[in-house]
Length: 426
Image (tube, rainbow, N blue to C red; front, side, top):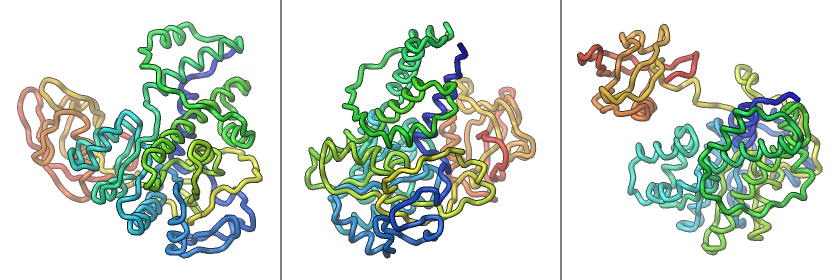
């Protein structure tokens, strides 16, 4: 019996759960009285139950009546995050000191770090280090997190720990494959057995009685696992556990903070149609809620190849309460990169250069394979994170100074910072 690659499974779960990157072509989801493909324009806000257009102030006044506000996103959409910040700011102006922000991007083990960030006990660099371990690129959330810190808005870490997710998924995958009489490579079985099992987390109660949820989530996994239903079921349960965990964290916070309102920021597929986080949180803590979905009106031609080819089912449900039309824009084309492959170096302490791309900023500066970067513009580099953090603050066209160690000698090089159109090297 043919076995499929675990990398495909993990990649699929990451793409779906996080909704990273543009995933859904705009206008393919129908709603009562509203055809998003025809009626939604950039900057336009539609109330989907009626098709009525709202101004921003009308939307904020409406949301002010809700206990929980869900704002979906594609994680790499700059304008989705701009909508989120507008809503957070508007609610904080109306209810100062009574707004908390729950984030899928913050995993539960990092709650203490989030608290320290809001309290001003750690600086931006240290928080970016934490955020990078919890999620990924900080720049997309920088303005939201800065606003939360400046206004002392509590941040709620809603997501499961990575180690728990990874071990649970791999172990479950092997167990269910065996039960389905599928061949499992011995090396995979051995790898799972050797994995250090984390302390068993409290598992939330699963609500598995939603056929629309299963149909919608299952659509993303067609084509994986050789079409075997037991594998699709595993995918769906993994997503369900993810949603239940975040719902439970939100409900627990509201139970313990009855005077607060909660704004939840999560990938679109966690909040659309209500059957992800919203319904599951409501089951635990019944309180009024609304879903706002930033909706990309049209993707640029050079980004359309990133859209997932998914045949989504037509569901007799509203995708959200409000759709807010936005342009698609990401930060990928603006990233400052030296164009080098890198690794931590212990002796000398710094960042080891493992390779240099042709025509890159590093090549133009004279940086070579085997060099060790020790400082950038006067800031000591002790590990890879130090370099990536410093580069995140640079602007294209500006110049700087890099110090390297080459063959035991310290060398100072002039660097012209620029973006890199090809490759994903730092």
